[in-house]
Length: 78
Image (cartoon, rainbow, N blue to C red; front, side, top):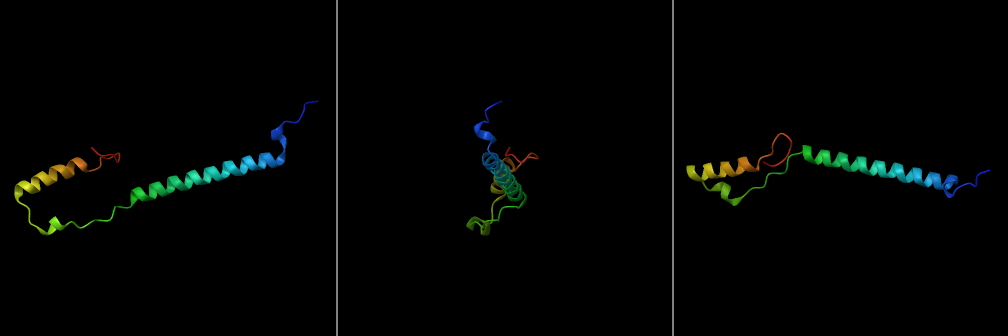
C-alpha cells in the first residue's frame, strides 16, 4: 500500500481549486478591463493655444508631429 501524500487531503485539493479559479477570474477580468479601456477614446483636453490661429508653417509642423504620434493599425506608436 502507498502512503497517502500531503496533497491527497480533500481540503488541500479544494484550496488549490479555489485558488486556480480565483486566479483565472482575476486574469480574465483584468484582460477585459484592458480591452474595454483601449476601445474608448481618451477625453479630449482643451489647450489654450487652440484659440490662437496658427500660421501655415505652424500648422504643417504640428501635422507632422501628430502624424508621427498617431497609432498604427496594430495600435502602436510609429
